[in-house]
Amino acid sequence: MSRELAILVTVAVAVLILVAMAIGWRRRVRRDSALTAPIGVPEHAEVVARHEVLYVATTAHDQPLERIAMTPLAYRARGELALTDRGAALSLDGAPTVFIATERLLAADLATVAIDRVVEPNGLIRLVWRVTDGTIVDSYLRPASAGSQQILPELQRLVAGSENGEQP
Image (cartoon, rainbow, N blue to C red; front, top):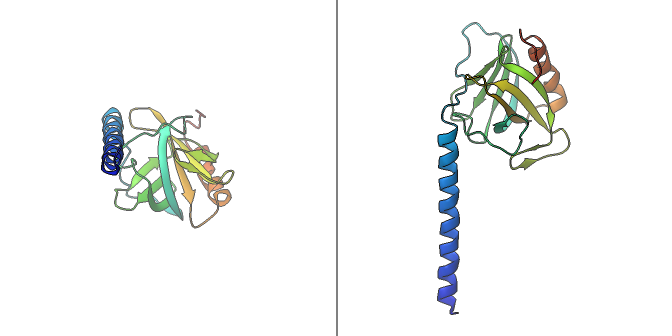
């Protein structure tokens, strides 16, 4: 096999892989198009705490490797988690603010793995919440400004304050 033919085969394989990835992502986006994250913070919500975070992913509940491509939570981003008296607001760079009301929050705990992110034990915060159609999802955050152990009790107070307070 000549060198030119080997290069051509390598490029063709790389292009096929990229096309397959693009088709897979489009299918995932189409599959999850019915799921929408609640946008906008209530007018009179009082901010209790703010934390810089890296948003990692939102996945199907208890399936940390099954990404949900829900707008605007489809891509990893830097942002801020604002805890209010009415819920948690997630402001990601370049996206509208997602507000998870206290009534939607089901649990908050620690995790180590989500999609393509593996961190030290309990380095991620997992928020379990209900999407508008009632589907339960898990959103993973990696704290940047404070430790997971500092943010988690604040989130658990929000979960405990929810009216349904049920665990998934």
